[in-house]
Length: 313
Image (cartoon, rainbow, N blue to C red):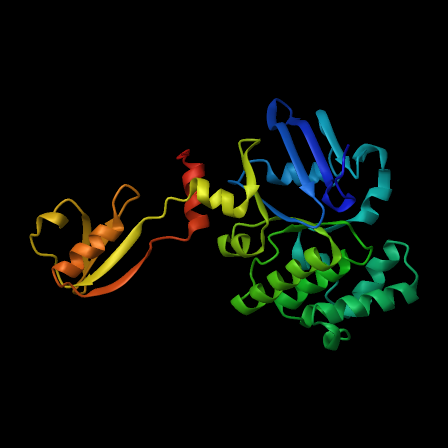
């Protein structure tokens, strides 16, 4: 007996998906499920097949074999009705008409969706308030900051009450504060409105903060797909660094350690095979002044690099 709630079921289910351009196989036997209300980031090198995968999921290009089901129904059977359930921002601010106001952009795109003007006004103003844009609704889109343009694009994408939001590099070009604000809003949309968000990004900090799961696409195949914490646990091999004041002497405990010296500080680089607690105890025993003890690299960045190099467990 299946006791799974509707909210727990997959909004997208992809099975054995293949796509070739001429003789080049771009997607090879892709299997992937997207859960309702989750944020999943598709990562991979340039040319890995990310854009092709997303475009097949949006019904923009056909595929050779396999299946893509949206709400348990093959996407090819939807026709244009599929797009009322999808919000898409593939080119960021380039989707906007810069010479008309933010609100007029909403009226224009809402009209394309077949919404009444009263509906657009009510929902558009509600979205602008939720995304902190309401006071700027009468400004020309071209006069908005980059972050505001991104949020306006998201407002437009949400006009049709989509179940899934596709975002391509949503924080590209944003400053730190705008990035943090946008990430917060995206997480709120996912949690409060049960919208599934599928995004691509090369900005590791964004991926780390916003994602529930990561799908790593390499050479047309999904090599790994899991919760972001599991991804980091499996592939991150961040080295620890202990910084001490001055040069190390000739104590035998430290002879085999990898060291670097700059500006009167010695950095001791500890790999995963070494016992960092023992090294710290030895440094204290010999009365070294310990300045810092940290990881050399962001865990997610480290995991992505190791996976791309094939350095699995």
